[in-house]
Length: 340
Ligand SMILES: [Zn+2]
Image (cartoon, rainbow, N blue to C red; front, side):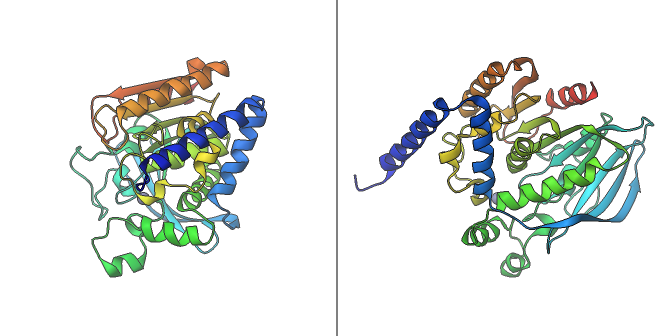
């Protein structure tokens, strides 16, 4: 076997066997606790600032909501912008949602804008301006800019090529050499954004959910697993098995976490959110997170929820479409779930 295909398959099967043996030897609480500790270690550690700094940048009024821009600093030496969308309709503290974009030009892409900040007059973008759809359902929304996209691309990448789509490669490879991961950095900043958002007077800290698409769903999944303040999660264009998605189809390097298969396959990682409410959504013609893997993940995660006596808190939608946001069921599900 000079080529390595079957060798890789063998390693994958061995990792699965070792996980199954470890899981069988532990009770559910012990298993979950161990998975979370291993997960934190594999993501790498980032030094956080003592108290999150926030600076208001702008405020724009629309007929039915207000859009604020704030600057936040969570990790020492780094800052980022975030949009906060607030319904105008009076209503006291309301449910809050963290809206997490994936690959593309950053938070503007989910908040109804083109890359230059001007309004996007169309409705064909794959993100469907989903942060705006959520605020129009009466929820307060925060949409932070993830590092590596839009105005958070590295200057070094822009100097090489002003048309570079993102900085995932340079960020990932350099962080890996320092025992850290780009996913870990993104998760750390998103957890800080949660701290800030939960303290806002418009937001009910007991009713905060998260919605992420694609690479943003990876971050949303991990934030939900690591922080129980997330009351409900909707993961879009991402739920699958690693084997059927990032291990079978070419994906950005930011999807690959060292040692992750020694910890869990993707359905088990997503299952860490149980028993809190969870909605999974995917397009039936998504070429990079294929429907077959989505179906397998849904079945496995449903069985995790059933084992925790929480099957009614789990739902899914395989909609007709590609790698894109639908929201045809998930957005109202989130509104109902957080509205309780
Ligand atoms: Zn990436």
